[in-house]
Length: 186
Image (cartoon, rainbow, N blue to C red; front, side, top):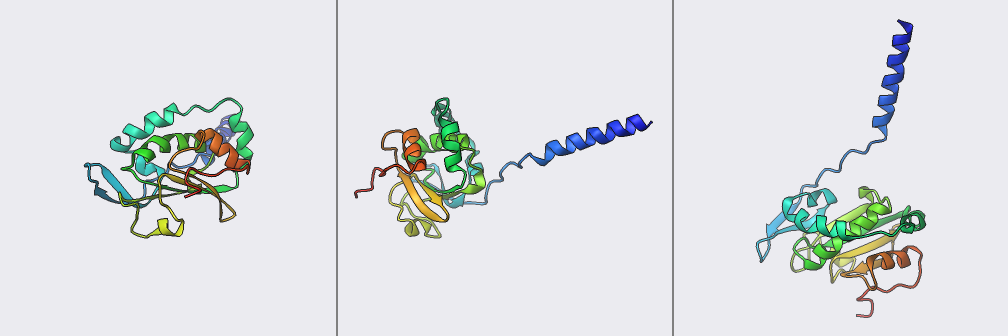
């Protein structure tokens, strides 16, 4: 009898420990939407990655996410450089550039083990504005714009498309090497 009780205690302890480390899936935020000029769904304002889990958004997000390849060794080299960063991501669910770059950006952020609570996402209208106007505070003119934040201050940003490639641009920014986004001189 004592053996059975001891076995049950060990079993429940092991099962309990397993569930402690599991993160709950991110819940979608309640978002404001409208129908864009071409009939697509336009999300406005704060959103999160879980808001992209719709058939319409997955149709462009999933293939581009899968297309981003990360070379062996890249993650190990860059993982420690990203551990203290947070990110602000301005995008447009209607925007072809966002639809091309967002999946690969998230593939890299996932490889860097960036938790979703370290990424603030803001979706803009076709006029590149939002209800709360946060895009003005960050001088957002082109999307997508991924801002790398360190200790609450902007470190650098990738704007609309990579200069060389997303991996190269991430690498330069994370290593604090000279990097200017495609619109830095405008």
